[in-house]
Image 1: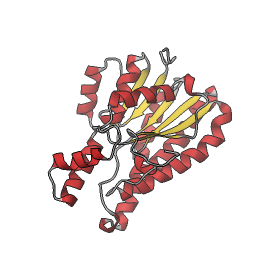
Image 2: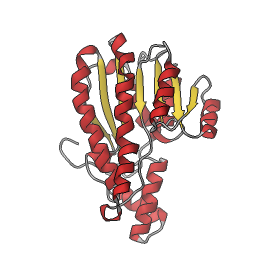
Image 3: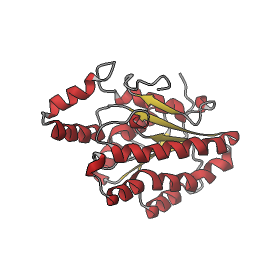
Amino acid sequence: MDLHLKDRLFIVTGASSGFGKAITTALTAEKAKVIAVARGMEKLEALKKETPGVEIISLDITLPESLRVLYQTIGNRDLSGIVVNAGGPPAKAFLETEMQDWDEAYRMILRWKVELTHMFLPFFEQNQYGRYLFIESVSVKQPVPNLVLSTSLRLAVTGFVKTFSDEIAHIGITANVMAPGYHMTPALERVVRKNSEVQGVSLDDALAGMLQGIPTGKAGNLRDFASLALWLLSPLSSYVTGQTISVDGGSVRGIMG
């Protein structure tokens, strides 16, 4: 299927590993143009070797000054979409948290995404077209133990995306959230380590215990995840907006999962 992504320009944040890297690789395979953003230049350079033609920029995307640099990087080019993606705060239970943890979680998960959304909206408005795609977590549908900071602030992201999507739908701009369950990413590794500590079991046993609750019985494939992301970033998804879509192997038990 032709997704009509050829020569379209996208920003992908958190692009050097996990979901961001998988989406970047998939976009370039469709001959889209990608500005790959991440903090570590070493991983970005490795990404560029693997996917020639990708444009890389090393920034801490959670900082306001980084957003301004990224904005200037676009210049007068037409921008088709942004994959809004970054790592989360440490895995903690509520009773382990202090107020500074919540302040930092707000900065890491919510604040920069709101600012980025505001900042880049004019690029989409001028063309009456654009795709915002936020990569969050299945915990916004069904809380995950020891992820209270991530769950709480990511729920705020889904709330603002749902509200914002209504305001811009009439001008050809969509905003959606993907809510991944367990995929083999650095984020999952952090949760496995935390569960191993809390339960007093090995890392392998902690992971096995987590996967037991998934009807498909396995962790997700990043390539499969990226294939859905590409469709949501494409012109073919014009009638889908304001949605939070679980990609979780069936682990969310609610009827509206």
